[in-house]
Image (cartoon, rainbow, N blue to C red; front, side, top):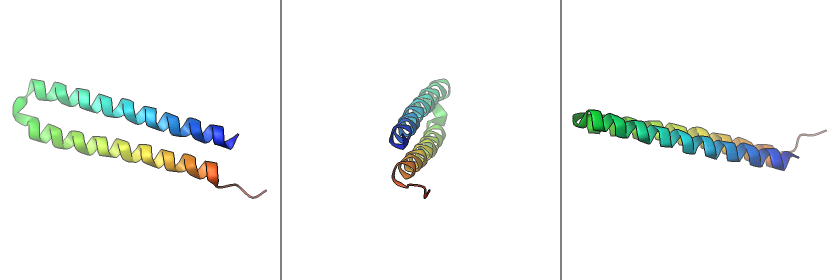
Length: 74
């Protein structure tokens, strides 16, 4: 049962990260279209935000793997 829950947790983390990065990219493109002179600032903030989302997803995947491989002593 732990393996199934770990797989579901890892899958949800990946799906959430994909949706989040898609939203970040889309909103950054909207911002660049509205104000092309701010492309450098928008791009920098987009990359930082995407990295934070990826970091959170990686953390969730590591936790799912810990749940999978570390057995609690009973």
